[in-house]
Amino acid sequence: MAQSIDDKFGDLPTTKLVSAPGAKGHFALVVVEGIDTGARLELDGAQPTRVLLGQGPACELKLTDPTVSRRHAAVEQVGDRLLLVDLRSSNGTFVERLAIHEALLAGGERVRLGQTVIEVLRLDGRRASPPAAQGFGAVVGASDAMRRLYPLCERLAQSQVPLVIEGETGTGKEVLAEALHERGPRASGPFVVFDCTALAPNLMEAALFGHERGAYTGAVSAHAGVFEEAHKGTLLIDEIGDLDINLQAKLLRAIQSSEVRRLGGTKWLKVDVRVIAATRRDLDREVQAGRFRDDLFFRVAVARVELPALRSRDGDVPLLAQHFWSQMGGAGPVSEALLVRYADYAWPGNVRELHNAVARQLALGDLAPGDLAEAAAEPASAPGLDEVERVLALDLPLAVARQKLVETFERRYVERVLRLHNGHVAKAAAASGVARRYFQLLKARQGR
Image: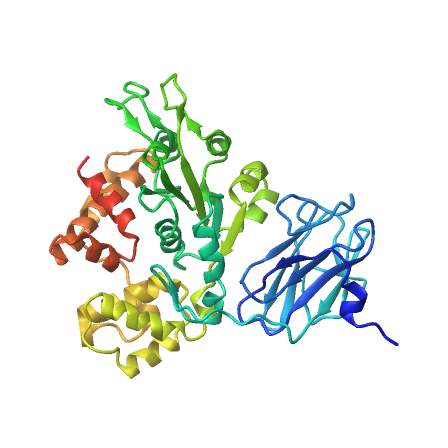
């Protein structure tokens, strides 16, 4: 008599993990040949994520086979199948003796990594039902892709471990980070955002760790860095994948030792900070390419959450459109015609683009552009070009010139949105599509 799956593998060690949005199957990866025979990884359909296979400590299915790379391959669930991706491994990834870069698996296949053979088992009928919640703090979404995230988010909110939030631009990574902060034990402490793309490289170290008076030309007074500002709270390092490689070692030391030293200073300052990182980049590939330190990756990626793109969130576009419409003072429900237009659009800018489209519709009404793609691509209006020309005329280095324009834009933007909302910070932040605490940080910069 043929053995059932449970009879055959029921006594093997099991690592429970969860799979991708819209999953219709429950899969197990079981090592059936090689020195790791018996290792098993289950994907039970409870959370969208990509899992790693390899020798490295960040891998969910960790193998000791020396012919397997540190990050050999990745698996994620796409609908009712598994997407297997080779991560530029040294010895390749094979499905039924065929070398692959990417392959969709339905169950029943054998995958070879080095000298290790993994059997892909389909365990239908055991899929976990997503929770009924339609949001987590300020994060809104009722699709399966989002609802499967909320139980994990609840656990992470109560945790102190470093966390990486991954996702395309505009998916709401900062909003999720602030929601985790506000629902956790550090809620009474500060929530500080450091954007790795907003400063010139020569200004980054001082912004992160602070500086003493006279530390460099222009440092006329001492200034605390974001680690000190976030003491007893949470520090979001946004777009950490863009952080200069030379600063990554210093950031690693600050996170490991919970202490910082200001530029020009001699004392180490103890800080109590939970670090959350966010990135639009694939950090696994950045590590393999040598652009991101693997030791920093292991330190910040103790936990990982991947926010799905809006195009993968079935049914969330009308829900979010109505949410933004009401949040920004729109009367009544959004018209069916407008919801149909929104539902037919791909939203490459994700939730941020939808927010801006709703804001534009509220402001312009019938005058709003009918084509959403054209509206999103509209260039900035002529006013302000004078400022560009003025900065260009100074013949500054690129990074310095860019920073001056960013500062000018932020100042004008904050002034305008506050004026539109009668100085109400919470409403201005909501209309801007950014977290309230980050908006307060922008506002504070204008007063410096």
